[in-house]
Structure formats: structure tokens, C-alpha cells
Length: 575
Image 1 (spheres, rainbow, N blue to C red):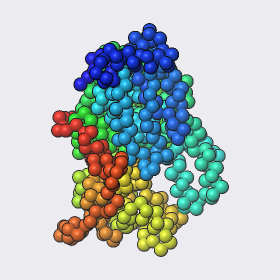
Image 2 (tube, rainbow, N blue to C red):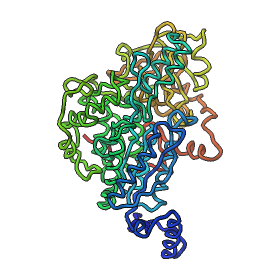
Image 3 (cartoon, helix red, strand yellow):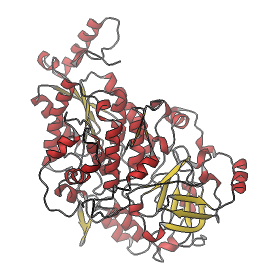
């Protein structure tokens, strides 16, 4: 039930006497130095995700200051509160394992603390989806502020930025093309400033999708983390949060089937991370909206990749910002978008596009009739090896591998992969299909970004740079290659990858959206009858037990079942 009280009177602690509850609350908050005038104003909560472990969020303290300034200039009382902070490289076993926990933490704090609206400050991959999942459930007026991408840097005469270049250099290191001293020098230059990855990885993908979704002020997706404009934008966010509180514009009014479709269009057009599908599915599920993956695949027919940005192209996020950020993207997509969707500004997406600065010549964002990839960035695969469906980022694939047949080489776990991938006597050729299983939501656990299976060292040193790879886990948005992901159900619960044996012939046909295990049906059923789940899917206590008992599959967003609003009342895309 929505609390009708405002400011410090919202959500009073239950002592059985509301007047006493307010009296006690004010007594304690006055110990922080607040005056009665301050405590009588609308309260804007600010979710602070700063952590010494999170370089993507290194600028959060300054962003908090700027948001506070905006709130106070608009006549409100800003109150920051901490939540879980997740960084992709600083979470064992994987940050995805904790995304739902962060969403619950954020939702519960929004409900427990008095606030009339909330500013969500996130950046690194799982933080923004966790926050949007939270406010989709809490349905308190809210606005997203991202930390922003890092600037690009240089290594010698090469321009670099995390983390597509991280993977490129590591591939060169594994292949013997650079040595220990060189990789150590490169390591110190790949992340030249604070901020999220400087390519179209998951963080940048979620930022762009969030702006298209309407939960972010226009222009906020691409401003570099270290730019003065990032702080000015944060000040505007604080002021706008006050207006959201006054007008009671809630996430459920903004995050609709139409606006989710707009975000999916943008995901395709930017050549965004495959993680964007999982996160948006989880966000939509919190509102009772089902993501129709075949319908999403159909959007690709008229939504080509327009953004020439790594890992699909050549440029970096600071180039996209200089090219106008989301403005040229939304302007190009305007004929395909639902323009009547309300945004956090109170205006429609169409009105915001019309109000954008005039276009100017730039080389980063192409037009619909001159894309960098014509077939849609992400494809949805069906077939007996895809189960309920699998996906592939076709815009980052090798063209000659989009149709491929080869023998399977199966790795049963992340540990098995680590132990055998570099063995000198590994029975593998460039035509082999590498399969990693038991690495999904429950099998890993946490569905890690391990889908970028390394090229076996014996092949890497021979110059092989891409192979067909299939898994039930995820891949970083910064990665590239001919990689099938999210095979669902996962192997750990008996999905089709569990039934593959080394040597089986695999057929991948991306143009026709097929992924097939070329084994007779009766043999597949015989294997199914003798399959046993791995022991790793069991847990006895704590968060791991909650996770193992309740997490759902990739096609449902890898959220907890009890957090998804069922039965679904709508689908997206709707067109």
C-alpha cells in the first residue's frame, strides 16, 4: 500500500503511537544537525553505491554532492543512504549472483526509509538493472543517474579502453604475440580514468537503454564520468526528483510494454550487450510484463546496428558522446519508436526527440539506410540444442562462422574448462565447437560471464582467433566472437546442453536461427533417461540457499520467482 504521508512522516516506525514515532524520529535526526525547516521539506533519497572496490563508481561522492545541490535548490531535503555496490571484477563467484540481492536491498531501503522520490546512482553492469528492478517493484517516484563511461587512453600508438581491448590484448598474450612485460604495462593503461567501460559493454548498454526507457534525463547516458557536464547533469537530476515527487510520476507509468520495446529497439541499434536482454526481462517481470524473445528477434528485421562502436566497430563511448550521445540514435530510430511514452521529464519521448539539439555531421552513428550491420545486433536461436531458446550477438561474429558444422568438445564446468583448455594434447581443431555447460544461473552458480571461452592455447598460438562456442552462461558486452549464449533450460537442471557428448556434430545456422544437435531423437531420449543433476546445485543455508531455491532461467531474467509479478498481464515487444 502506498504511504499517503510525505517527507519525514512517511513510513513511521511502528511503536503503536504514530505521534511518538514522529517525535522520536525527529529527535534522532536532529542529532545530525537538521533544523525544523529542513525536516519539513520533501525528502529525496539518494542511493549511494560508492565502494573502494568499485572504480566504476569512483565519482559517486561528487555525484551525490551535485544531486544534493539540485534537490536543495529546488526546495527539498536530500538524504543519501548506502546500498550494496557491485563491480564486475570484484565479486565472487560473479556479480550476477548478487544482482537480485542488490535489487532486494535497494527496494527494501526505499520502502523502509522516508522519501518522496529516489535518485538511483549506479554504473557498473549489474547495479543499474538491480536499481531499476527495485523501483519497478517499489513503484516510488524515481530517476536513474549513471556514473558515466571512462575516457579512452593509449598504449604506445594504440588507442585503448576497457574492456574490449582487455580481451584483445589477453588473446595476444595467450597466443604468444606479446610478452609478460608488455601485458603488465598494458594492464596499467587499459582503465585510464574512473567510470564504466568505455565501449558498448553492459554498463553503456544499460545506460542507453535506460534513457530510451524514459527513466533517465535526456543526454545522461553517455557523458563521461570525469566531465563537468556529468556533475551538472546530476544537479539537474536532483531538481527533477523534486518534480517527480510533486507530480507523483511513478516507474509503473514510465516502464510500460511500449517503453520496453523502445529500449529493445535501442539495444539492437547500438549493438548492445546480450546481458541487456536478461536485465530488461527481469525489470519487465517485476511489472508483470513478459519479454517475447521471438518478437524481439523480429525487431531486428528493421532495426540494424547503427553505432560504430567497439566491440562491433571502431569507436569508443567518448566518441559517441561527442557525436551527440543518444540524440542521433533516437533521431534515426524515430520512425520505429513509440513516441507517446512518458519519461521522467513528464514529457513524451517524441517531445524529447523533437527538443534535442540540431543534428550535425558525425561519423559514429549511421542512418537506417547505411548501417554497420543490417541484420539486427542480436539473434534468437531455436532448435533441439537451444531448448527454450538461445541468443547470439551476430554483429560481433565472424561472418564465415555464422553457418557452421563441427564436432563438439564438451567442458563440464568452469573448473574442467580451466584444467583442460590449454592442454597440449587437447583433441581440438579450429572447426570444433567448444561447449561449456553447468555454468548457468544454478550450475555455476550465478551465470557468470564465462561464455567468452578462450581459444585453446594450441590453436591461439597457431593464429586462430575465433571459433563457435556455446554455453548456458553469459558473455560480457565488451566481448566479441561467434558465441551462443543463454541456452535454456541450463544443463544443471537437465537442459539440452546436458545431453551433448564430445564428438557429437553441432549445426549452427544463424541466418535461419537454428542450433541443432545432430543426434537421433531416440539417442537423445536415452541420454536424458540416465542424466543426473550435478551436486553443485544444492545449498543448505544463507543467501545461496535462497538463490538456488528461487532463481529462474535466462528467458525469465534470472530473477527470483517470488519477485516476478505473475500472471503476466502484458507482453513486449507489442508491435
